[in-house]
Length: 413
Ligand code: PMP
Image (cartoon, rainbow, N blue to C red; front, side, top):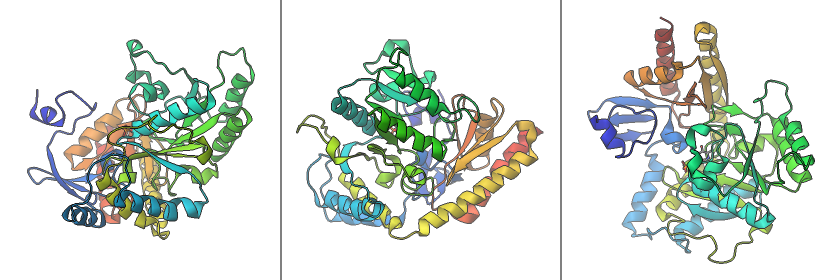
């Protein structure tokens, strides 16, 4: 076994290994132990929307540690948690007129998904869940049941959650109204689709290959949920926190989900996950859904600082501006390298460049050799995925996109 594989984890984790040992990072740059520099277009799988070691975050954490602030992760009242909740309400929920209750669910995104599915089933007294083709919601048992890619599954895992997979927007080809398809299944009691407790959806599928649901599709999805008394859960773990250009990804569609899963960048880079629930859905008995690491206090400190970026609309403008740069540059690549069968899709600062089989992985490897960390997505890893920090400098953004262009040029040689 090569040394870098040993270093990642003793049990093989990711499909793609970046063959080095990383040591430090700042903003959108990573450095390995030999001092070699890499531009980061992966941002810790979307956990670092505000960049690596953002000084407003690290300064606050250092101060908190020096103050000997509470560090345990129990879901108990602390000053750090209160400050986060206050800031989240004032800066995110109140201006959007959203009246959710916040439930801390554990450190990872999957924990928020598990909580949402469990609560939906308990409230509705129904066990079925609807999720979508190519959706990704995590790999523990409940969340896995809702993940729509058989690569991750083995029959022996079984599942105590019955999931019906419906076609995501665009899955059946352009112009096919997949919500109408879903409505027909639900309306026909003999179709084999039991009335579900909830529908769980990403408004932009991240792991699924950067598939962007249309606004009408999302509105229609909400309408079907209301019509059949089904709870609508938006999984905003990857594309929330400003990624699509607004804090929540569903804002562009003007919908109002019953529950929202948030994780990744909400903790400013530290593990944190939460579930937003409509107040009337909070039907838990005390003790019914608890755990040891429910609210990492250092993550609350980091998170409170990142929310300062939402005090004004500078970030929203920056995401629109830099997203436009990415979109235009990728469209130019599509024009210049038709041999790769490229297709571009995305929104805000999450973009995908789909290519002929095998090429996205090769581009990722070539990019790494040239100093760029970029990952792939999609059911067959056919999409090169652009997920830089929202705060990435324009120069570095251009530099990274230039490396991608060089790699594509190499692929057509
Ligand atoms: N939902 C979505 C949309 C995700 O992208 C991910 C992680 N890629 C998860 C859930 C699972 O989150 P975690 O890996 O933190 O458990």
